[in-house]
Amino acid sequence: MSPADHATSSELRSGLQIEFRDVTKRYPGQDRPAILDLSLTVPAGSICCLVGPSGGGKTTAMKMVNRLIEITSGDILIGDKSVRKTNVTALRRDIGYVIQQVGLFPHMTVGGNIGVVPTLLGWSKERIRNRADELLDLVRLDRALAKRYPGQLSGGQQQRIGLARALAVDPPVMLMDEPFGALDPITRSAVQDEFLRLQSQIRKTVIFVTHDIDEAIKMGDRIAVLREGGVLAQYGTAEELLASPADDYVADFVGADRGLKRLSLRRMRDLVPDGAAARPAEQPRGAGRSIPDGAPTVSAEETLRVGLSVLFATGAPVLGITERDGSPLCSVTLDELREAVTASPASNR
Ligand code: ADP
Ligand code: MG
Image (cartoon, rainbow, N blue to C red; front, side, top):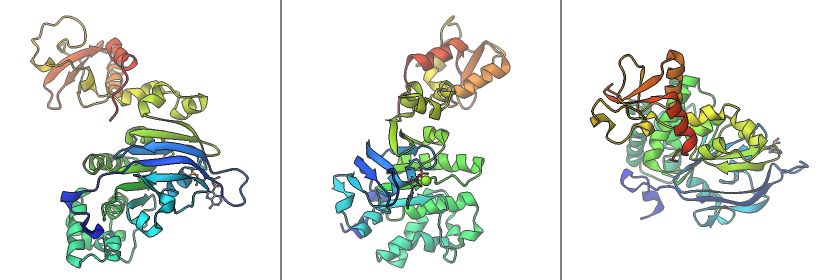
């Protein structure tokens, strides 16, 4: 199979591991490095969020992966290949790139925009059209949009097209720099959900830059917190960062409400004992009791944070958990909810 034959839905290229090895970046004329001795490994098929203060080196770290910025010392490996030893054109072809400003060409149709890299690779018109249709399906936009111009789309639609374009030749690696930062909160949340759904199908290795810790908690399988001067403060899962921040800086960065944020990592379903739905009504104590008359309820798909909020808002002593269709599962108390969070760490995606 030649490289140009990639990108049919039957032969998706899943992600490759990315490894930063003692990477340092010094810009000419700057007295301190933008990134200092960064070492971390992003497992294949996972999302790594880079967070930190403005000027902390997030964009610099990301752009060294596709060599939009050259590494001063150290190396980055994609799979087992050094980016420093890979031809830049070939390297970038295998790395999808999504930025906040989207950067669609305004004078080209959506279909034309999605087809930019495939055209460079010499794909036939028909193949490019088919791929554009496939990608529009993937990002859940109407295929008819292929004929429109970017200016005729909403911000959220443009960002989805930006994603589709980045995925056009099915790269194993995606770099995303504050990709949803310019969207209003509701659109942003929808596009985040959309990307997570997409990622569960395509399993790329993603480096996702954001300054927003909540976005990092939502999107990242792992989170790298950078501090001023481009130094890695902590690298771990959201649960690890929230449950045991490495130092005061990280604790501060994840927020004094990190206990509440941990609640967002878990679903009410985690508190439902096996077979709860089939359980007869009399089960006197402990999680798994039936739902008392008049108790407030939440769906098992909601987070513990939502459950807690409902308990607080209603002042009720117990909270019922139901299936999405409202059929009852069991009930929990405030104490049980708290124990569930402090006792066992959340499983990671
Ligand atoms: P972030 O994305 O976290 O906001 P950047 O990676 O853009 O941070 O910048 C990190 C540091 O490097 C900042 O101090 C910034 O001023 C500096 N910097 C970024 N790009 C350049 C450049 N081309 N030349 C000199 N300094 C730069
Ligand atoms: Mg930046």
